[in-house]
Length: 210
Length: 264
Image: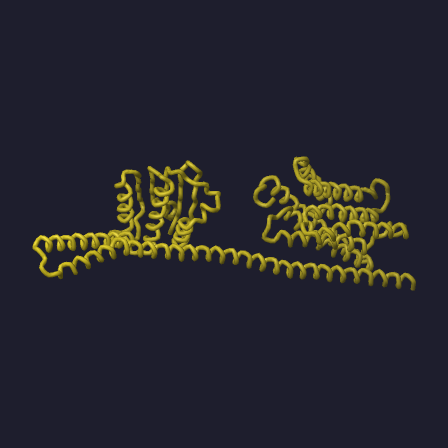
């Protein structure tokens, strides 16, 4: 179960499920499907980089963070309703990538290092958007409710895991490695579980929640 | 030395970000709970206000009905009893006049007897209209039977009544509600619906008493707000809510009316 092989398999099956009947669905659904596909692609490529080309995959985390931030921002932009909320989403979607990318222009060496600031800045807004969506959903029609909970739960926990990972690197504790990786894998499975429920709700319980 | 200071910076950086993450997530959670509570309370208040408005409308309709009923009773008393007693009183004075012939005396006495009888009959009718004695003496089913009989005797309307429920005759208040609902429905069907065939059926379904009322009258557009919020409908609605039941109405113009309501 802790083998990331199964994680890719689950992720791939989920992608497949979401891409069945893709054309009939709305914008939010399409963005979400692309998010799943993108995450699968980046994860898979980064895991094979060492095997295929003999290069370290640290720099792929930048792609992952940035991709996740941009596409989930679009995802929430279609879900959020009030003007203020959308204003925050649209401003950050422009300002934040410019800021993060400009750091690499001024200091290209940073591209090959893991950046705590980047992880924090790219995840926190998504957590805030997810919470805003949860707030909007109170006592109302719950659109993409399970997907939102899955994203929120995973981001909440994974942010800490990445930060702890960094702390562990500083102290050079080796035994901790597998533990954190395994927790991350379990969290991903839980996240996919929520995404699967979301897919089921969209296709089978149409009138109930979506 | 250099590597130690580098490690220290890394450590401080990691600890700083962990603290920052904790703090921001805590803030997000607190804000979420604060605003959610506010939103939920606001929605609860709106819901309660709607309920109060609805109750107020019901109360208003009850008061209006009460006033109308008083007016009707006053009218009945004035037209059917007071006027007749007035003539009786006049005739009684006439009896006092001296030198009345035998024939005149008999005529006046007959007049008085005739008028008092009519007044008596009218007062009985008014009392019967207010609360049929059969309802109290023989129970709801007999009361409804009598009501149906009255409508059937006009020949213009045929009312079928079927009942498979044993009403609790001790519960006079609840029985009166059911009786009044049927009275109102029958009155509406004949007066507004011009119905020629009406059916009333009481059944039990899963421990719930149900009444199904169907007529073949002109019906009405139930989706039209004005039709639903009339005094008669409001009255029926409040009586059903007193009975702890719910109701459904299906009607379209020229397709009659079907009303089903349940009660405990």
